[in-house]
Structures are given as structure tokens and as C-alpha cells.
Image 1: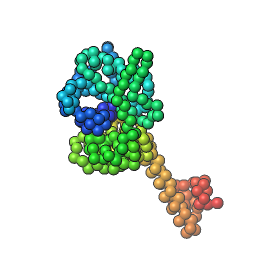
Image 2 (image 1 turned 45 degrees about the horizontal axis):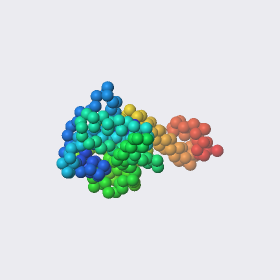
Image 3 (image 1 turned 90 degrees about the vertical axis):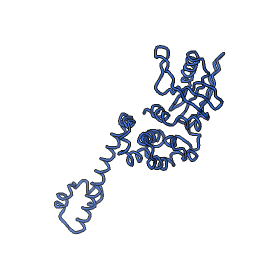
Image 4 (image 1 turned 135 degrees about the horizontal axis):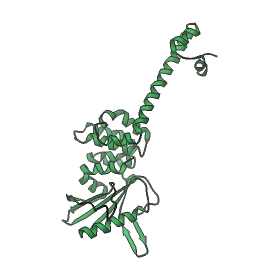
Length: 266
């Protein structure tokens, strides 16, 4: 699933709130920044490089990296990004890893002989979800937080009732991130808001991952199961009225083996 792309999409409309509440930086101004050429370094789409001016008027570059699971080797890539942006722009560079899934071994420093690289490590599972219900632009992040699964439906309601023009995207991102924590809640979100989510370009990520196909299969199986239960109930009523078995089978479309399997006839 394209979790990192979903988060990058969210940042496009929630940069100020994200930097303040998640990263802990008060940014006064965001500026566009030219990505490094691919022949110099392979920049994945999950990277979020941004040039900012902080509350003290200092200009710097922030590099935000989203990781669904802890991978110590990723630190070398982050160090490489930092070095190249420093070389290109001559500005201070701050690096942040936003880790989405709980890890007991994640650390905020890379040490290798003469190299020491420290960065900001945000552990999403430690953030209190309840405190973010009032953060309109950050509601899609609720499922990743402490206690967030229980508050996901409430977050969905708040997004749905808002007048934000990007609420289609927010609902889709909420569903995508929920799938990392609880598939049952994810399916419930898709069931409730699929008609809205399909209006978001991000819904293609859900389709691409096969979730849409799985939901349709589940709905079809659910309908078939409901039809079977209804036919079995009808056969019980007909038998209680001493109707001929052959007639019951003809009307309900069931077989004798199905009736025996469900204990309707011996």
C-alpha cells in the first residue's frame, strides 16, 4: 500500500499543522525547493523536502521521511540526502523520520566510527489520538496514534461533516492508514464512505492494492449467505406445515444434502 504517498499528499494541505503538532517546529514560511537530480541521488516520492523559515527567522531545509516499518539501513539514505542538500543549498538541514508502525529497536541516531548522525524520530504510535481530534487537517492520522483505532469512526465523522474541499482525499487517506492498524475498521470505512472516496484520486491506491476487489467479493459472499439463510428458514416453515419435500426443494432451490447439513431434515 502507498502509505508514504498518502502521507505526502496530506502534507500538501496540512504542512503548518503537521510541522507544529507532529514534528514540533513552528514554521512561519514555506518555500518551494528544487529536488535533487536523479543522477546524483535517487529521491523517492516518499521524501518531503521543504525549505522553511522558522519563528526565529532562520532559514533551513527540512527533510521528512515516512517509513511504515523500522529499517536501520534507511538511516544511511537519510544521511546521504542531508549531505547533498547541505552541499547544494548551503543551509542547515534537519532530518525527520516519521515511523508509522511500533518498533522497540528504533533509535534517532546513526553511529559508525567517525560518523554520528542524529535526527528527529517521530513515533506515531506514542502520540495521544484523543488530543488530535480537534486538529481538523490531521484527522487522517488518528488511526496511527495511541488509542486511534477506537477513535477512527469519530475522525471519519468529523471529516465527513466538515466543509473542507479536500475531504474526499482526507477520507481516503484515513482509510488507507486505518488498513495498517485494523482491517475490520478499514472495511467499515470503505462500506460507509466508498461513494465519496471514489471521487478522490487516492482511491486508485485502494483499488491497486486489491482491497476494492476483496470488498466486492465479501459483499457478494454476504448476499449469498443471506439468501441461503432465508431459503433455510423458508424450508423450516414449509416442513412445519407438512408440505412435500419435493415441493420444498423446488420452491427454495435447496438440495436434500443442504437441508441435512443444516439439521432441517434427519
